[in-house]
Each structure stands twice: as structure tokens, then as C-alpha cells.
Image: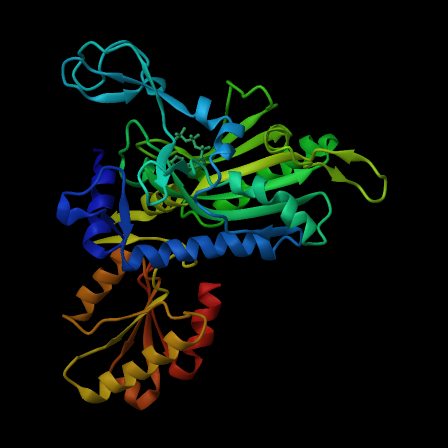
Length: 430
Ligand code: ATP
């Protein structure tokens, strides 16, 4: 594994961001659990995405669909037939690779000869029911977005939305990846955030460019080094697509794809209309025009985004490791320390500030407490998990009612009135 990846994987486990799934039983390839810090960071990220989608745009609504659907869905979507990955295996070291990732006919690991590609369907099957012989075959959803197409008509009928409009969702997807690996990058269970934007066929060009730019602007607003983000234009296109782009984290030592911007035309709604026998067309009430809406999709990986944010924020300086995470996604917004743990008056004053910050915005519960070791060790510990501000209560605080606030990135310290601390942090964190 690459050096940076090794450091990230180790930090994630040591500090409680991400753990290998079912580790006490030896783990299970391609499954991970988010620990106390990881879940805070992931929730911050998802909330930021959700608010931006549904609150910054007045014509986007959300859903939360079921993971298991009628299996016909996956026939209609083409996944039962086409959701396949060709796999090659090295005859010498038996390592397996996605055929698409290999350029020659030799094993990239040992130079051995490779088998001919074998085709595998990567949908994850499951069985429903309790009585053997009466069980029904189903699938865990291979991509979250299908539920949006299934609910499109219900959303339309239960709301006042008019085209163009969007439906978004964050949810789990499952794939029997032939080569799970690279930590969160290629898992068998992962989370996606999708927007399906329904519009008139004549407006596809305009909206495609709009969403391509909107999504890039959004990602740039949370990465530490936005210059590491770029577009990849697909050369091979699905027959219904006019163009397709990926938003990539281009400094990644492993894969780069983070989100796809897809031109889906009327492929999905027409497919589901045909298989279900339902009318999924849209009627414009002003012009009476009836048509199948065309769709632009933005489909991204929450876990991949989180991994890339960690990579981008990871910084080694002469005497510290610091995650220069955007405060919006950092697991803790602030940490509070009493200078000494054995001085009850300092501990009491610090606890009051800690409780206050935990209850109210701007920190909104995401505040750490640390009274171990010395101040230097506590700063080191908070830097490593990306806490933007550390607040220390010392003996002077009891007299002048001020605390020392230390900035993670500049390491500069300021004395701030306890009374003004919330406003100070609010301004900084915004
Ligand atoms: P890849 O080419 O890497 O297999 P994909 O093009 O099949 O990805 P999509 O089906 O477009 O991916 O899914 C949308 C997003 O979901 C991807 O851009 C990625 O961020 C995320 N994603 C896809 N597969 C995985 C996986 N196995 N583990 C984690 N995230 C994934």
C-alpha cells in the first residue's frame, strides 16, 4: 500500500475514524465500520451535502428509499444483465485484477501470466422469507439512485414540483466487487449521494453544464487544496449518453473517481415504464405537452469523498501531524482544556465552557474535552484529528475572564473573553 494510504489507515484506526469490519473475527474484505470520530465527520459531510441540495435549491426534494426492492427493478435497469466486471487472475501469484485496470497481459505484481477475463455479475443477491422452498430471491441495491426513479411519480403526485426539479438521496449500495481493496475506496458496502435532475429534453445541454459546475464548486468549497480536483471526460459512452464526466481527486495515489456527472436521457424512466407497465410521462400543464423527462445524474461516493478529504488534509510538519480539515467537516469544532487537571477551580471553569459550547451552536455538540498530559500533548492530539480550535483555561482566566484560543493551522494563540467565545468561534467557523 502507498505510504500516505498506510498513514491514513493507521490514523483512522488509532484515533477512531474507521475500523476494519468484524475485526475480532478476522475481518471481512471490503467492509468497514465508522468509529466515534468517523461517524461525526461523515454526518457533517452528509448534512452539508443534504442542506446544500435541499435548502439552497428550492426545487430539490429528498427521499430515503428501501435497500431491497422488487427484483424486477434490477432487470429493468439492466443490472441483472450488464452489471458485470471482467476479472483476470495471475496464474503464478493468484492475485486478481479488474481487466479494465490492466494494460498488458502480465501480472502487475509478479509479472506472471494472466488468465483470460472471466465475467462476474456484481449485484449482491439475498433471499427473503423464512420457509425453505418458499424463499424469494432479491438483491441488495447495486446503486442507490434506482429508488429515485421508482419514487419519481409518487414525489410528483404528492408535491407541487414542476419540471425542472430534482430528487436527491443519500443511502447505502452493495456490490460484489471483484477486487475490493484500497480501504474505503472500493468496498462491498458503501454509501452514495445522488441527485436525479428531471428536465425537458431540449434543456439537457444547459442543465448538464450547470450541474457539472455546481458540483465542482461544492467540492472545491470543502477540500483543503481545491487545486487537486479536476474533471475526467469519459471517451466510452453509454448509448443514451451524450457526455459523461467524473469529478476526480487527482492527487490520489490510488483511484481518483469521486463522483460521476451522467447524461441519462430518458433511459431509466422509459425502462421502468416499459417493465412496470406504468405511465411515467410528465404533462406540462401550461403547454399540455406530454413527455418522458430527461435526467442528469450526479452520483458520488460519500466514503470516497471522506477518504479523499483525509488524504488532502493530512499534513506532516516538523513536530506534528495535522489534519487541515475544513471546519465544516472536522469531527470536533473545538477542544477545551483546563491547564492542570488537579486544580478543581480550573477544571470547574473549563467544564462550564465545555458544557456551554456543547449545548449551543456554533460547535453544536462537537466539542472535545482533554485533561491528560501537558498542553503540548493535547495540542498534538487534537491536531492529528483536525480540531480547528483549542481553548485553554489557565490561572489568569479566573482573574481576567479570558481563555487562550489556539488556531490549528497557524498555531497562533489569542486571549478571548469567555463571554465572547461563542461569537468568536462562530465567526471563525463560518
Ligand atoms: P468505479 O469505476 O470506481 O467502479 P463506478 O463508475 O462504477 O466506480 P458509479 O456506479 O458511477 O461508480 O457510482 C457512483 C459513485 O459511487 C462513484 O463515483 C464512487 O464515488 C462511489 N463508488 C462506486 N463503487 C464504490 C465502491 N465499491 N466503494 C466505495 N465507493 C464506490
